[in-house]
Amino acid sequence: MKMLSPLPYISDRPEHADIIARLPNKWTSWPQGRSSCNAVAREPEETPLTVIKHSIKGAKPSIKLSKKLSKKRSTKVPAKHELRWPKRPVVFISDPHADAHAFEASLIAAGVTKQMDSGLCHLKLTKKGRQSEIIIGGDCLDKGPSNLSLLRSVKHLYRLNARVTLLAGNHDLRLFMGLLALARKKDIGNQHFFVRMGKKVIPLFKEVFEQYLADKNWQRNIPDEDACRKALFPNEKWFEQFPYHAAGQLTTEGIEREVRKMHSKVKSFEKNCVAAGLSLQHIYAASLKCQKLFLHKKGEFHWFYRKMKLVEKRGSFLFLHAGLDDTMGELLLKSGTGYANKAFHRNLKHRDLFGFYYSSIANTFRTKYRDVDLPLTERGVKAIHKAGIRVVVQGHINQQEGQRIAIKKGLVHVEADITLDRHSRKNEGLKGFGMGATLIDKRNGIIGISCDYPTAKVLKPKELQLIDG
Image (cartoon, rainbow, N blue to C red):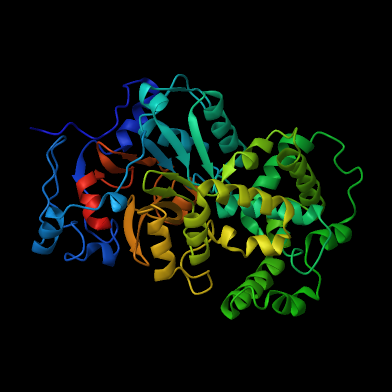
């Protein structure tokens, strides 16, 4: 019996023509090349990813299993360790990075929306869209052409009554921390967070200035350049005092990296502002406006951080932006995701910024499992597995050829940042804006769709069960 195509249906509307033309129209059992799996996931004695490529739409997957895997397959998996799929289909789109066109095209590519007219925010949910959960994997801000347009596109999804879960990304929280640092009394632990945002935040400030301040008397009550510099930048003593302040909480490598980055950002921040046509007075005024837009209850974008979650669990899948560490693994085992999300918001609201940003909670949207990051060891992975989590679905690490499966620290990860925003794509030699999504459901398994890979990548439920072991 031939399997029905796992590819989502996209209606043949004029507004969809360019999207359909750039998307794969065929599918493949999940490839084992380096762009699709890391070395551990490619190991033939450990995974089933020795697959035969299919060029015919709807063809039945063919998998060559090693004897070890065949034996493993015949062994019944204990119920408490059995891989559980989300109750409803999940569409995971991560790292849209201020590119609303890429974000909306990805929703259409996933089959959950259709475009009713030209331009942004003219979407309508499809039947699949009404049945699915759309998880946005963080990093809505920075890099791309328009932060505000992207935020309005996300808000449009909420207005459509879509089931939306919005996860925290490091770029999203970088803005929040910078705005809070400016609003709070300066200390050694927080005074670097504004300039730490770096040049990637400058386009947002320029957008805000042009859309909300340029035609108003914005200079009223704004101090002069020197006073703005003093308010925005860390003082000279910071570089001497921060290593002592951070000792015991950050690793030696982490402290050295932080100080090194800040030397570079302090040196370049004002130059980057000038290159964008902005003075420090412009930046200061735009920052105060951002505080009203994002932090105040009546602000246009207050919903953005209010709706944000740190993690979300569906079946045996944990969705987050970056990764985990031992402390977070224990927390998820003992208290669950609901507690983790409450802790995220309460810490962000009440804890000192330094303590929050270098904590296990923030590590969840920052880690790349480097030496400077909080460690994930075998102890942490055991706790994560005991918590019923078998697969981590993440953004944060951008790929140039579609989604990638990676076994890291003994834990299965689906790397689903497929480089959507056009500025990143230009820097990496990719054409136009990106589009694609990661689809997860119990009937089809995991489907990776990207305009940068010639076929959709499909990992069937039984194949994933074998990887997970």
